[in-house]
Image 1 (cartoon, chains in turn purple, cyan):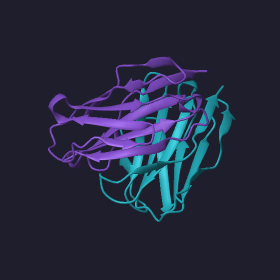
Image 2 (cartoon, chains in turn yellow, blue):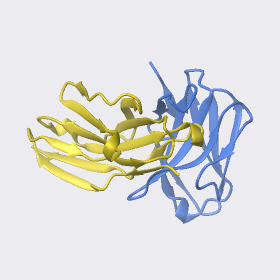
Image 3 (cartoon, helix red, strand yellow):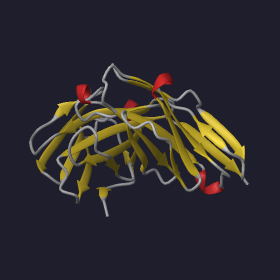
Length: 115
Length: 113
């Protein structure tokens, strides 16, 4: 069975602080993909990153970085020097061949950046 | 640019009404999905479709049905709306296999009174 856990329900930080959003996953598939999405107050989920299970390289995109560790089944997301515009709900998701095209989403982490 | 359009941002309906939520994508994607989002529960899959006239049940199909008569359009139907179907509904489309990105619409916030 596939499962994604985002243990942090809500996080508040002051602007310019760094913040890490945790994502832990479970799967028996050896090939799988992990995703992060951002849902701003407007409601639309916006794709941020996709990572396959064979690529453990960390990725950096501007103030965003992702740390994928198969040994701990984690795919954590860090925002450096947070800004008010980063306030949103962030979802981690997993897909794998054994479950067809279905994505398994975590319950989301609501991030509030205080000016 | 990828575009998934949901016909309504907000809807208010009465208990027992038949409700149609429409979703259109312009990317010629094979796969389309309907999710329901509730606080603390994340996104839960209601139904999905791999092709025209094809549909598969997701995790919470009870009380819902779907229709996909054309590739670009995927409709979610609440046959007889109930108050426990008050929620945010999100549509997504996806080009191919499990590795592909799902693109989402802006969502429809449905209130059933």
